[in-house]
Amino acid sequence: MFSLEIKRLSVAAAVVASLVAAGLASAADITGAGATFPYPIYAKWADAYKKATGVGMNYQSIGSGGGIKQITAKTVDFGASDMPLKPELLEREGLVQFPTVIGGDVPVYNVKGFKPGQLKFSGAVLADIYLGKIKKWNDPALAQLNPGVSLPNQAISVVHRSDGSGTTFIWTNYLSKVSPEWKQKVGDGTSVAWPTGVGGKGNEGVASYVQRIDGAIGYVEYAYVIQNKMAYGQVKNRDGNYVAPSSEAFQAAAAGADWKAAPAMYLILTDAPGARAWPIAGATFILMHKVQGKRERATEVLKFFKWAYASGDQMAAALDYVPMPDAVVSLIESSWRVIKDTSGNPVY
Image (cartoon, rainbow, N blue to C red):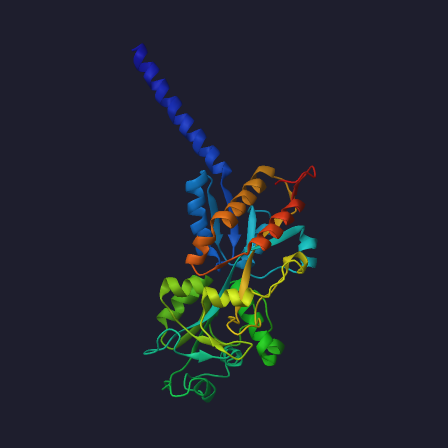
């Protein structure tokens, strides 16, 4: 009887120990929320980091607008946005930002008989489609860009993001640079008053709509193009060349980026010069508070991203993101010195 009681107590102690261990493990996990643009690589990094360290990273892919709101409200350890915040806004909210990877927005379409890369677009034509001025696939403006191609007499169904989105910021920032009418009537931002079209939530939602609607056009981050095997368009860049989206084209767009000269790392890569540059490229950013009430959590966040910069480049490249150059990584890690605990001590 006595030995049976001892056995029961031992089992109970083992259960309690496992629950405590699980609690400690979950307490060490870090949380983030925001952009859907980098979700594929953040998910891949999180899985690899968990296996390497035992520390989990729970990332909510809710759009850049949601990520900015959550980090401002301090409900997550870090926020994520494809729209860099201006230095004055960072200062007002007590935030810092740093880039993680570079990718690109890509126009995608669902037109029967047309393969990936077969259709060509200019920025001006994309703007007119999203303004609702070009309504059919055989419009003369599209026909002029695609000589010898038999375009269908079919209505264009425009798809855009319905949520606050950094992908939308990159897209609308580009359209604002190439179309004075777009800049005047719509402008850029994570959310805009769309002149036409239907909205999908996240890159996932836009991709799903485009795949389901015959005659649709939309815009998604390149990783979603690859994952969903979508038809994408070539786009005429600033140098007048038609280019297809690829990690090499994103790298060409980022080649002239001077992060050292960018105040608070505020840098936009759309409509970049370069013969092979993809014109709708952009970096994605992490947002953190300068003053951290939970020192250990902030340290874990920075450990995660230090690991990602050191060990995650191949994973990023496999998903066609462009890793940050070593010189930029050194600049980023130096910038972390301003992140401090409530006693004024650096957390990393």
